[in-house]
Image (cartoon, rainbow, N blue to C red; front, side, top):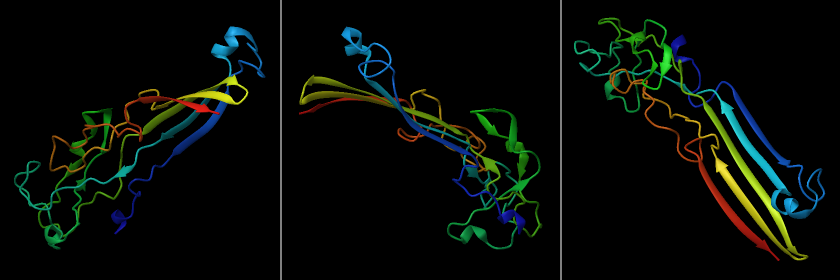
Length: 211
């Protein structure tokens, strides 16, 4: 059936990846501040970045196959006549009756739960909602690096490096729950992504002595 063809879960529709490094124009061999104390303090710095901007991954609305449940206490949800509840790994989709995207998306209501309902009794079919019809929250992750090398002697150099993941500390939310049988968690952005994958900002510094 057509509803079984849809967007692939975990595959964003659009993705922009920027990687680059830039030598700040200060210090010996560069444009400005080529000597003196300002060269020592401000010269020789390199800035690098890995920036990722992408749309959210695709998700599928589901409903518990066995009822009654908290979403509809009078409805037995599996109307497909396939005994889906006893099939390991199988899930049931509800019927779609409206636009699932909330008019004003907020972390507490990212999707419109009123757009879904149980399949009518005696329908003899699966729910009409398709696969991957819900788009999760997007990602903006700017990772930055800053490095400078200090020439102490001819064969003695000190290198300082600092790196920051999610330097903007942008809130990148993990995908929300999509089971309409649990209205209190459906479409609620409850947690952010883990550190290193767009989570909270983290910084670290290091010193390396080359001789």
